[in-house]
Length: 254
Image (cartoon, rainbow, N blue to C red; front, side, top):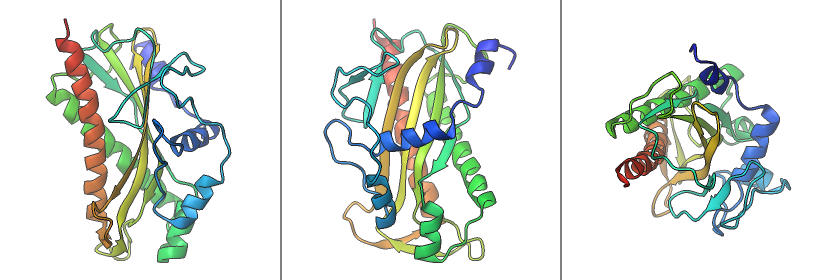
């Protein structure tokens, strides 16, 4: 990318310390609801022991970077800059999605399922999830008539996504790819998405939405790698559809 603004936005954008803070924020309740439970008791215990202060939880409350929490029934928390609108944006650019697994996930897999997961396998999985995220968002937004571009312009919206607190209940067993795990959930992940103006680099909005994928009736079932992929893609498609619908509504507004 030759445009300086886009190069800045596409640079590595989050430190490990900040990422851990996002995990803590995402585990807090949204709009007064209950927190999303972790799929494993050990992970739930670890998450609940954190004492970091959450982001503002009352509609109208402002963040340190000038965003305001707005009422929303589709997503966990949505923060918007006062006066910001999606109406000017007819195209989008998307940064590489950062993916971070939940604390103790590897240890849980070893303890509960006797799965030895190497750091290389974690990185490969993170890269696969990030690629899937980009594919889903590009597909859904382009179906709405919003093409993806790689240069800054007044009508280009920049998406800066991360998937944090990722917890896969049934990771692929490399020794037995067809293996399955008996569980009521395929796992969880939390979307952390920021929207920027590509020319000014101004932060317009932030979304934090925990997603737990489980059987609708709470019953246990065999979970597999194929089920993980399907469930993860469904969550990503829902998020992309919500953004596309908001951009379509802004485009058609008088």
